[in-house]
Amino acid sequence: MSYIGIIVTFVFVNNVALTQLLGLCPALGVTKRMESTVGLGVAVTVVAAIASLITWLFDHLVLVPLGVEFLQIIVVVLSAAGTAHGLEWIVSKSSKGLRDSIGLFLPLVTANCAVVGVALIAARSGYGPLESFVAGASGGAGAMMAMLLLSTLREKMESEWVPKALRGTPITLITAGLMAMAFLAFDKAFLVKLIG
Amino acid sequence: MKPRGHKLQESEKDERTGLGTGLWKRNPIVGTALGLCPALAVSYRVDNAIALGAAVFAILLLTAATMMPIGMQVPLRYRFMLQLVVSSALAAVAELLFQAYAPSVASRLGIYVPIIAVNCLVLGGAEHFGSRSTWGGALLQRLIEGLGFFVALLVISVVREVLGSGTITLFRMGTFDGVVHVGALESHPASLFGYAAGALIVLGYLQALAEWVSRARKERGA
Image 1 (cartoon, rainbow over the protein chains, first blue to last red):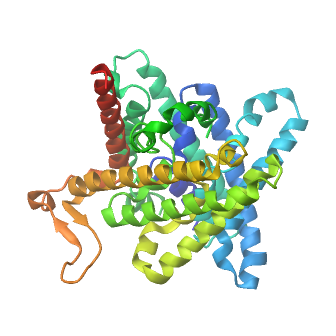
Image 2 (cartoon, one colour):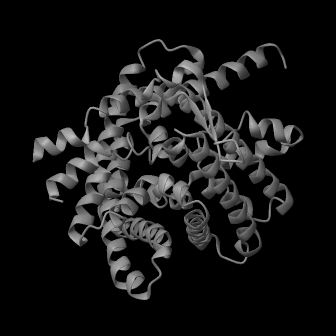
Image 3 (tube, chains in turn blue, yellow):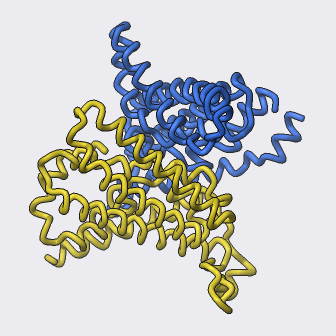
């Protein structure tokens, strides 16, 4: 599959948050504020990209030669957690700005469904190393886009009247549901025709 | 996982109402919105939901049961990593079991079985493994959480499948072919409910319903 195809598939057709429904728990909490949404989104994107690459390396250099592919999920989970921890360490040694923006959110993605899900999907799609990396990055970017859209809608909704029982998480879920409905328009067949 | 810290103090006074509160007010899906990711994605069919609910239940309990004895010997900073290894090993076992005994379920659930390894519900409560709470009490609490997750998942999947395809798919048993047909909905389903969008909307209204009911109960002084 071409790189453009991978990007379009992971960002739009199989959007991690709105089609695969992964990584919702932290997304629901964090989309209340725009800055924290960006922070989490960047953390998810970076960690997903690196973790997908590491997963590919382990998959092809260790698991397949030894014939223990069923251990894949352990490798994926540990490489995601390891990447998040490693980046946290690097960020903690660097500038204060970086530490305050992304550093805070790296612990949140240590064991994040979105990161692990993207890495796992990439690993099971038969991609090469660079394709896995691109798939991971675009999966994370798709999650970030969905979260940004959701947090914008939530900010707008703060001035609207919402029935008491629906306030908070319920209305956020319904909003996300309506967004997911819009994402149904990104039909795979349609996009294949578009890109060729 | 964050809200659990202060809930721990609260749990002592809640203990007498244990089962009811656990299943209802602090229900993982409807109340505290934990462990949603795989739950929503597969709940377009009832049999999927039952299979995934059972897997989450088993992994939740076995992770807790494994971590309690060994968790205390491990320094706090490594405990979470150890728990990740345990839960992902169990998730790998679950996937192998599904592939061996229910290959069709395994292929429909796809990545959502291995991903139970990082389910917020399974990973939450690592701090329960300290010396503060007794093992029995903590295990019981996890059991109630798992049960609450299972029940909520079942409700979501019944709503989604009835509205989305007009059927209730269970498991094949004897002469029963495993599919309950729900009248006219089958020929004119609202197929939106089979998609991700439907899952989010159903869960949103379910949470609102739960909130509304508990509000009404509180007002009546119950």
